[in-house]
Amino acid sequence: MILPRVRAVVASVGPRRIAAMVLFGAFQLVFFGPLVNLVMLAFSDTYFFPAFLPPQWSLRWWGFVLSQGNLADSMVLSFLVATLTTVLAVVICVPAAYAFARLPFPLRKVFFFSFLLSNAFPKIGLYVSIGVVFYKLGLMGTLPGVLLVHLVNTMLYMTWIPAGAFRTVHREQEEAARDAGATGFQTFLHVSLPLALPGILVAAVFTFLSSLQEAQGTLLVGVPNVKTIPVVMYSVIFDYPATAGAVFSLILLIPTLIILLGARKAVGGNALAEGFKVS
Image (cartoon, rainbow, N blue to C red; front, side, top):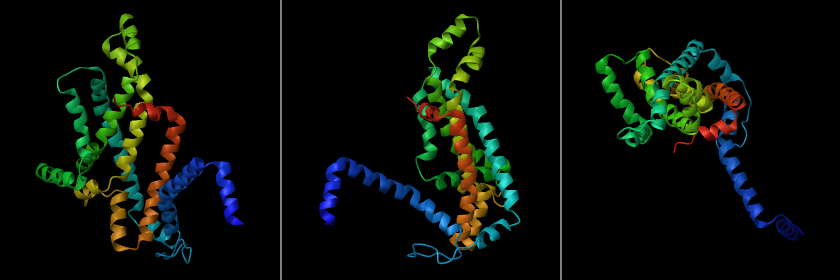
């Protein structure tokens, strides 16, 4: 009785639609499965594989994490570092992005694609090399050293995405402003920049979130004086069960979701797509 009904459903819906639904379900499982597991870890007393659900729900590890004396300081420091990194990246990279999008100069494509180098290989090797240089310059364990490491990680976002946004600005609009008597800087400030602003905001959001969650570089360069939330989370994971680390992960996840939802509402989904055009 069951097999004929299954065949009837498949025939009515269509094999392609069934295959699409199966693939979509598999995607949802792969994407949301770890998040669901993270939430169950954070709100359980003990939780071990192969148990499907925690044997006992508890807020024990939330109390432990929130009782850490350095949690509030590390949270404030994390947002301070992320904010400073974003501001510096905007000031440094947005003019460079405009140059890549509008100004012809020798080896432009080589320099443009060089921003991929920081993401082309495991970052721990890059951090070790940076640490050697920073040690000689006296930047180890300092806030400026941590900011420089975060800038290296975020320059790709703040250069590629705004460059794509500037390319979507029609040259005719800039030329019309120049014909009306505007200088090059006035044209950039009043025409190019406002039109490319959604893409720049998208890049700024990604830069802020990337800096907020940066752990390895901060751990190598900033310790022992600069301890952000991810650094504190590392120490907790090493000394306590994974349930404590899951709580820290949710603490980082909550502001990330709020920022992304706010940016999507303020900027709009089309800006995300426009901002990622890099050619």
